[in-house]
Image (cartoon, rainbow, N blue to C red; front, side):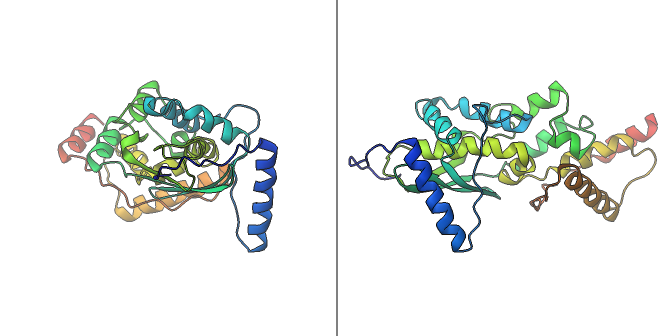
Length: 264
């Protein structure tokens, strides 16, 4: 992608693509490489709050509405044979007429935007588990999902590349990978914060100000509490938490703290 070519390869049936993908998987396994395919049962791509909201955000990309349905078809039939997410980056292998390499970079959320999200959610999210399971009020949901101001990226914040010959900005392989991210967020919701390079623990730390009463916490106390939260979450989901990106600091005005103390 990124170059024009009128010599598109012939259509390859789904069954043949799957066989080609299986051969690639076996070949890479023999070389010691571990793949992370996207496996979807039935037609539902995502089932949890974060996965569903990611996919709904994709559906709003009107400039790509003719490409998105093909992407949904590709991810459902198992064409995304490898998908990895890191800080601001998604890499994947997609089985089509050949095996194509996809890379998507996503801009980090602006510090001012993240600070606004954290402040707007202040006192409304009580725990890390509540956050990642998407169990919070409608108000918080609207803050997180608000177009161009929430946590989900819009097209101008992404750079899309694929090794296929399609000249379009978003080919069906890229679309399949993006929907695959939605499915992956069902298992690893914290990956969304990693992609946007925003520290999800900021949302929890800010909530503790509701119950500080007449004391404040040292940085050491906060770090210990955060480590315990991570350990508890890992135990609950039986997953290994990804390293959190560097936090974007959110300051709490001293005046606000004094007011909270007086009320208590």
